[in-house]
Length: 251
Image (cartoon, rainbow, N blue to C red; front, side):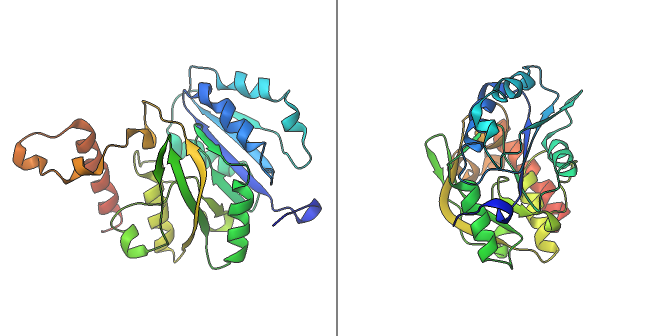
């Protein structure tokens, strides 16, 4: 499906960035190589000390940013780190496009990603958002068809999904982990559903700090750690964060 002129759907892309200037360049270059260019792009510097604004200013000279339909990049800086939910909410607040996607600063979209997302949502008017499979480095993370029963048990939908702005309730800024799971559960409680795109639309760069990069093998979660009298820190943090979500949503 192609779009041209006034018929091109307007998509806002919000990118929270905290000390990931080294990977932001590839994220932006991939974004401006899309077959359907974003109408708005906002990079929200969440109190970084590695100067992501320098990356944005340098890339503004790139011909990619001058393509017809490309909306350029807005840059916002928080004086201190407020967390990804606050950064995403601020980016959503200052944009107006009817569709919005929250893209991590270390995520690289394949060229047809935005067009695939929007085409899927247009084909499924009953859905509030569209989500896809991803690679974390070389490891595949396939998703699955929308299933509320399973969603209440565990999250299988990544933050980088295309959402109808009219259905977006905002991120809970008090949630420090599983922010995407919390968002999808909140939307489900409002009667909103998603549609799965069974394609790998982006790659997340493995990193040492935060996010999906803290992934650990599922078998570690199956070990009865309390019986052993010890638990790895990451497993403990995972379970504590999971308990917060379950309590909030009465799961």
